Image (cartoon, rainbow, N blue to C red; front, side):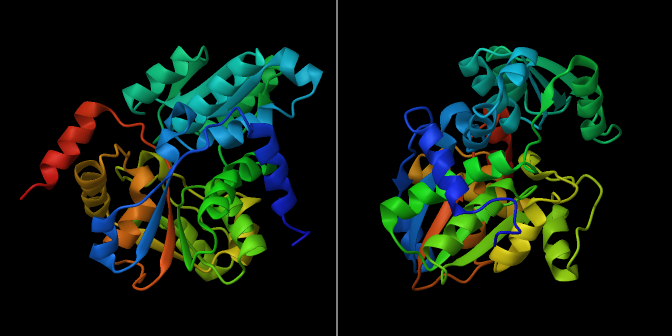
Length: 324
């Protein structure tokens, strides 16, 4: 595994950096959910993390390792929202400047929160503009250090601390279900699972409309797609990263997809039965279990609830639309 971007020691080091800074989010249980699928489900509540998503872990871990020159110049990131907030807050905690490139159609709550943390927001059209090119141009022009949302070893290691905490609390699991966009969270969590419990089945879950990772693992090379149209805005990535893909190829057992309708059903269940407010992307892993896309009967299952940043009106609209 030494040829991969990160190893378990990197995650352990990240966890030390985050101690006392990131929230140690709870692991939630639901008898109703267990009965529905015939399994013991353990929900890692990363929607209760700082900035409302797991992304704080990776963002803070990356900025915490800046040298003096990088801190003096500041940081730039491109993100649909949660990585934006993670970098904005982490930069504020370190007392450095942050510039965030965000899609103009990102949830208003995410744009407002990013600005609220003190970052400068630059908006772009996600369907016609290249956010990576825009980010690199600004970074070069202003001497900023670019931290991408997933294709960065410090980000990947930081995200893996969510799985480390889950295993620390509940012990061995038969299956670990993890939301999947660009692969930062999944690569970090899979690295932990392989080191701690090699027999644990690790499965990534992406939106049906954006199954680039599923196709990439099947073909053995990174497959790029057009920006997928899905309510899971945090997983509207076009391709895996050059660093995340090798980790997924070596450490992940399978990748499955769920539909937007299944995401809404999971959101409704989490809110109605478990009193948890989860954004569509944050429900990817939960939807895979609750919809039966992954067979989990008789197993101990870990589920990462990755975020809860969704506009209240949009949440209500989605849930209402799902009612028969």
